[in-house]
Each structure stands twice: as structure tokens, then as C-alpha cells.
Amino acid sequence: MSIPEPSPHPESNSGHKRYFFEKFGITERLLERCLGEALSAGGDYADLYFESVTAISLGVDEQIVKSASQGTSAGCGIRVLSGERTGYAYTDNLNPDRLLHAAKTAALIASGPSKQPIQGFTEAPAADLYPVPLGGFDLDLAARLELILRVDRAARAFDARITQVRASYSEELRRILIAASDGSFASDTQPLCRLNAFVIAKDGVLTTKGSAGAGGRAGLAQFTGSKSPEGLAREAGRGAILQLGAVHAPAGEMEVVLGPGWPGVLLHEAVGHGLEADFNRKGTSAFSGLIGQKVASAKVTVVDNGTMAGRRGSLNVDDEGSPTQETVLIENGVLKGYLTDKLSARLMGTANTGSGRRENYQSIPMPRMTNTYMLAGEDEPEDIIRSVKRGLYAPNFGGGSVDITNGKFVFSASEAYLIEDGKITAPVRDATLIGNGPEALKYVSMVGHDLKLDEGIGTCGKNGQSVPVGVGMPTVKLDRMTVGGTGR
Image (tube, rainbow, N blue to C red; front, side, top):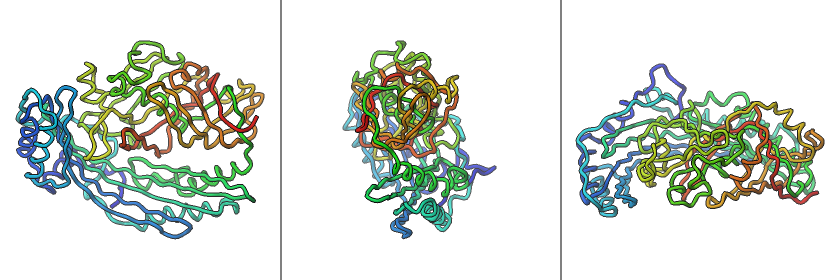
């Protein structure tokens, strides 16, 4: 299997549908029967989510191929909604008897006032954000293995202090088909791949690490320039070597400048999750009930955009069959709306933003982000740095956590520097940023014109489900933020 390059003859939407009809014997009549069975005990709505995934992963550790796997999976998840109740059942066997049994199981879980499905389906026009050519995929593992071996060679050549190197490559082709009792129908073929580099550097007793990665819904040709194996190896090596000479991060409240691109993960975690409609419908988000109110500096505009060609978080349709879109969440500091799926949109009386996502056919869909970022401002990045007397510049982040109910977050900066008298000086280690998402955005005083999106490595977790996402932001100055560190 491979992720091929865009073709002038991409697989059409009808081609996505034919895959399930031809390979698994699915028919429109069977879809109608399953939906009828799903609503046989009552319910407001039912849908069927068919999925077939082919995936491959390769890993090299210390110049040895330590892992290689390739596999396929297929199944169907059947959901029934009755008011706020959800019945869900799934099967990995797509023969009619098993599908009808799963539909009956879901029906019994969410019984309610009866509603019969309509006859026939209407397939809405879909976008073409990642064309997939006819002819399927090959199994040329040699080209993929060479990518990670190039990472290994380049990382070792970067600096003699790099003592360990790991590299990995993952790729999948996901085909989906969704049919619902409201007559909606959608299908899609979704490619995705990612290349990762990880290194360990050592100088005396001090050991540091660095990592880099890239990917998206495109083919092997995307791994060029900064996203090439050599580029990723150099970036991982640079991060590890930089930390060898870093000083301890200062502690206390100070001005903080976030770099462009991947630091948008802080925005994703500290703000984005709080703007997902299920949390707000239940009143558990720090943003609940605040639509139309000022929740950030007037310089802050945040959008979620699932329509960006080739991006890791983009989708032609979400996992409920709705077209994705660009949704303005915060505009000039004012909260404009939430990310919704079909259930939350119906219960809250708002429009569906096409944000229903799930990890796989075994999972219930819920409102999730796609590509979430802050729009560019008008400030020069250099002027932002020059405006800081004493503070921290954080262009790269590691892990973090957030409490949705109050917006409090803690993030570790995998790369950070002191800012002294308007100049970036010494690199620091072990810096953490501590704050409250809604409060932190109120202290944004400068926003650069250098909006950048991440390199295609984001994976978002929620309620035990993981989905690919994108993040981004321009250079941003926050006048106040608490920095955790062991220095002065």
C-alpha cells in the first residue's frame, strides 16, 4: 500500500461508494433495512458508519529495523439517537445478518418514540481535498524504509554527541461510507502518512533529546525541504544539541512570546477543547453560556478549518457524512460559537459545523477539532521580541494538559529562550507554562503577521479516542503568564 500522488483522474465520490458495494456486497436496500431495524424500537435518528482501513508502519532503532507491520480492518458502527440517549453497536463482520443484529442491539439501547427512515438517499457534493487516483495502492515498502534509514544516517552525521537515533513511518488509507435515516449519504477515501525522527544526545553526564516529524494527507513527494528525512533529522538533532547548552528556566510571572506554528497546540488544548459543543451543552466548559461575550483580547481571532487541502486535520466530510467547513470560534476577542456535530446541533438548536469525528467504527462520534489556529495580526515578529524587557520566548512545545471545566493548563516547552532587553539570548531547559486558557487570551497584546501551521504531526485525544488534527498560530505576545522553572 502507498499514498500516491494526486492524479488528473482522481477516484470520484461514486468510486468511494462502489468500493463497499463491490467488495462487501453492501446494497442500498441493505442500508435501508439496517436503518429500519435500528429505528424499530423507536428513536429520532439512526446512522450507519462503514469503515475499511489499510495501514502500514515501519520503525528503525539504532540502524536496525525493529518493527514492520501491515494490516487491514473493516467494520460498521450503528448509532441510534432518542432525545439525549444514544444506542451504539458495532460489528467487524459486514454480512447482512451481523449488520441487522448490530442494528437491533443499538435500537434496544436507545428505544423511544418511533420514527421510520425515509426510502432512498441523497448524496451531497463533496470537496476534493486529497485526490486519490484510480488503481488503488501498491506495496512498495522499500521506498518507505529508505525514508527512515535516511533519517538515521542524517541524524548521526549531524553531531558526534548524538548517541541514539530512532525513526518511524506510518501510513493508512481509510475508506468510509455513511448512510443515515434523514436520507443523507456520504463516502470518502482518506489517505494519511507521517514521518518521525527522535534522537538522544549526550555530553558528559548530561543527556538530552530532540524530535521532529511531518506528514499530511498527501504522498511521499511531500517529504522534501524541511520535511525531508534530512530536514527532520537536522531539526531533531538541533533540538537535542541546543538543550546541552541550556540554562535552567526562570520561574515566576513574566511576559511570554509564543513562536509561530506548533505552539498553536497550546491554543488547541487550552481553548479549543473548551469550544466543543458537547462540553458546552452540558455546561461543563469554562466557555459555557458566553457566546457574544468578550473572552479574549480584541487582537485574537481563532478559527477551525477542515477544508485546507492536504492538511492532516482536513476531511472532505466528517464522520457523520457532513461537509467540513471553516468555523470562526472567536472573532476579535468575542466568542462566536462552538464546534458541533449532529446531536449537539439538534439539542442546542444551532447549525451543524461538520465537526463530528470518531477514531474508528467502534467509536461514537463527538464534536472535535480539525485544523485550529489563530489568524495573523499586523505586528512584526521582530518588534514583538524587541518589546519585551525580560521574558521567555517559546517556539516549540512538548506535552501538556488542560482542565476543561476551568480552562487551567500546564504545558512543557521543549525549546525556549530568555528574552533580555529585547533580544533572544540563552536557551533554557525545563520550562513550563501555567495558566488559564480564557484568561491567558485576554493578555495577548501583540500578534505577528507570520501565521504558520504545524508540519502535520498532531493527534488529539478526547474521551479515549484519538484523531489527527492540525494546529497553528503566528508569533504572539502575552503580557502576563506564569513560567515554571528552577532558575532565577
